[in-house]
Length: 142
Image (cartoon, rainbow, N blue to C red):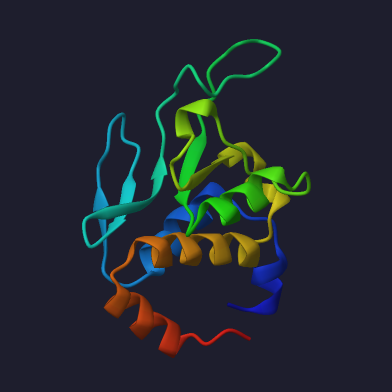
């Protein structure tokens, strides 16, 4: 990823591009044409249908742009949703579920590089140990 591209605000299109860039990814059509990205039959990123647990606090209208990203642990989840500088959140529906939520309309608060890291981490959280080890060996941390 070019530095200039890495530093620009993230978009919903980036979610699709970055998820598809990971190895062994399949796309399940989901409902209402909301894609579900999977590795080894396990979802790691998906676009969620509007649900009653994620609503605008002022209007009560259901968010139509919620994206679910898996995380490795409850500790990682809490770190992301507790940090007021990130757009990540959760709802009681996701208590005990190793994932965080983000609205597509708030992705621009992240750089493309930050979103890439979250999607890679989501993939790693769901990939088989062998696939994860192979990917990590080819992409050592900088």
